Image (tube, rainbow, N blue to C red; front, side, top):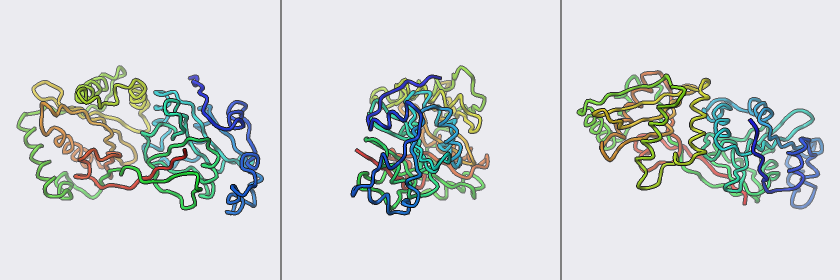
Length: 352
């Protein structure tokens, strides 16, 4: 697949590096000045003269670097998942890599968002569980110094302690998870939820049960993505009056289709609930490394009050029954996740 080449702002030498595919000695990019003195005194001075920078934009090269550094612990650590977003958006990869000889020591896997005019994590700001690909934390500030403005890195697990004054760090929205590995059944899970929320969850679950719903767990995803089309239609219909569904965005839709098609290392299923032969809810579930991800739910809450809580109950039950250790419903509370999940701190780094 050919990349659509954009022209990110920045130093001419960095653009040339992307185009001619060679490594630039770091002292040319960060000369020994009062402003850059820290990089020559923080433990790198012994070998900074031997370090070089290369910016990779070819996806085959980016893939090899990703595989070298990624921990592969989270869904977001997987190349197949991240690459799906490139297939949707076609933003130019910019993998800023520090080398000593032929050995890559540190990497910032970015792309250039031509709409917002900034560098982001490869895969967009939708990505989570982000961390710095480096063998030594001393390289983090160095990499951030090398990135042309502007830069936005979100959902970072931990902020290093020696950031330069050129970047701003702040707290991001919490990520919401629930550890379920010690639960034998859904009732064990419900006991960990505050009494008021537990009561409302159970009440809504029983209310929907009175409708005699038909529940489908769809694990065999069709090549024509009929399940996703139903899911998208329900999502857009729910938010049409508020213009709130991001599935009206063509690039986002193509990214979703791509990560559904690219499943294999991770698994995907839909949980669909029909009431009186009408699709009342469809939840998209991704599964990897004993973690049950619930990134998106489409529910007809106007017609079926309580259907959202009903789906929470089904997901808790399904994840526990199938031996998962954690449920991850991603970032942003939306006013309800804190009721059932524990918040985990995440951080943002920006460079203007």
